Amino acid sequence: MLTSGTILLAGSLLSPNPGLIFWTAITFVIVLLILKKIAWGPIIGALEEREKGIQSSIDRAEKAKDEAEAILRKNRELLSKADAESEKIVREGKEYAEKLRTDITEKAHTEAAKMIASAKEEIEQEKRRALDVLRNEVADLAVLGAERIIRESLNADMQKKVVASMIQDMSSKRN
Image (cartoon, rainbow, N blue to C red; front, side, top):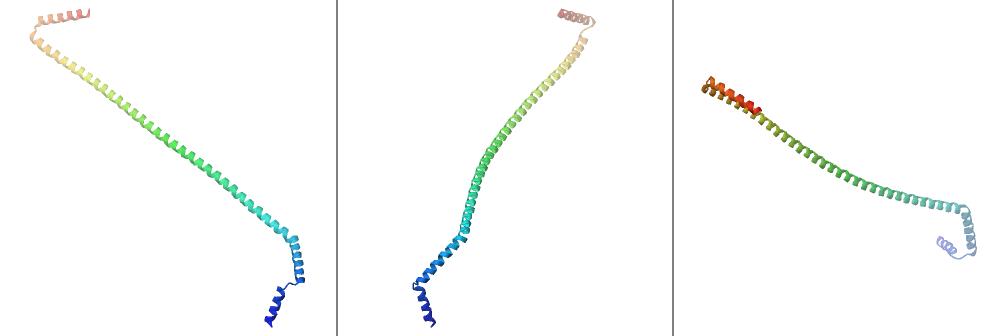
C-alpha cells in the first residue's frame, strides 16, 4: 500500500492542479513582495557597499602601485646620480693622486738637483780651499828653499843688493 500511496501522491504532484498553481503563484508573489520590502534594500545596499569597498580597494591598490612605481623611478634616478657622483669622486681622486704624485716627484727632483748643486758647490769650495792651502804651503816651502839657497850662495853685500833691487821693483810696480 505504501507503494501505491507513494505513486498516488507522486501522481498528484505531477498532475496540474489549478488551485495549487494559483496558491503557489500567490505565495510566490507575497514572498517576493515581502523580500522586496524587507530584504531587497539591505541586500542591494550590502552589494553596493561591497562594490564600493572593492572599488575603493582597487583604487587604493592602483594608487599604491603608482606611488611604488614613482618611488622606484626616483630610487633609480638617485642610484644613477649616486653612481655618477661616485664615478666623479673616484675620477677626481685619481686625478688628485696623480697630480700629488707628479708634484712630489717634481719636488723630489728639484730637491735632488739643489742638493747635487749644493754638494758640487761645496766640493768646489773645498777644492779651492785645499788649493789655497796647498799654494800657501808650496809658497812657504819655496820661500824656505829660496831662503836656504840664498843664504848659502849670497853674502851680506849681495843680500843688500837683492833686497834693494826688490824694493825698487815693488815701488816701480806700484807707480
